[in-house]
Every structure is written in C-alpha cells, then in structure tokens.
Length: 108
Image (spheres, rainbow, N blue to C red):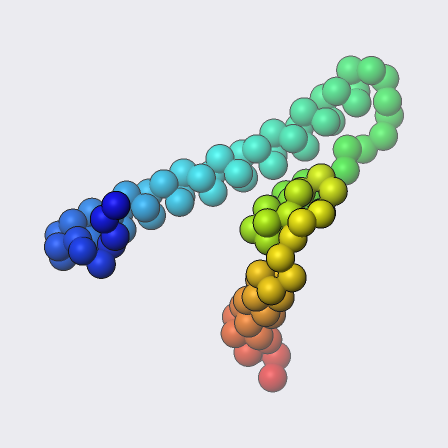
C-alpha cells in the first residue's frame, strides 16, 4: 500500500484536491442530514397531530457530535462502552485548543 509520502508533487496535489473535495461533500451531506432530521421530525409530529415543536436543530448537532465522539474513541455510540480514554483525552484537548486559539483570543 502506498503512502502520501511516496507521491510526486503533482500527485500529492491531486491527492490533496481529491481529499478536500470529498471532505466538503461529506460535510455538506452531514449538514443536509441534520437539517433533514429536523424537518422530518417536524413533519411527522404535525402528521400525527402532535402540537409540539421538534427539538431544535442544535439537538441534532449535539447528538451527532456525541455519537461521532464515541466512534472516534472506539466506543459503541449507543452504549458508550469500549472507548479508549487516551483517545478521549486527546479529542477533548484538541477541542480545548480550538476554543483557546480561535474563540478566546479576542476576549483576552
């Protein structure tokens, strides 16, 4: 199996372009799925005569975040069993670094 380190500069650029394009597609699909879940829940609640609001879109984002976090840590996303605490700690520190670098720098 070849690695990116063995690619020529032009192939490295193609690799990066393909990867970036598919990352964008993935994120668009995730965003669409989150929106669809909200709309579908709203429609289904109305269809059965439930006069309650669907959970806000942030609920679905938080749910996806929690399940993806579990997957990233090697845990079962439904039971949270089997996760690697070292990976969990790394992911948490990464999130804290993003917070500090991008969101706290203007408040200091």
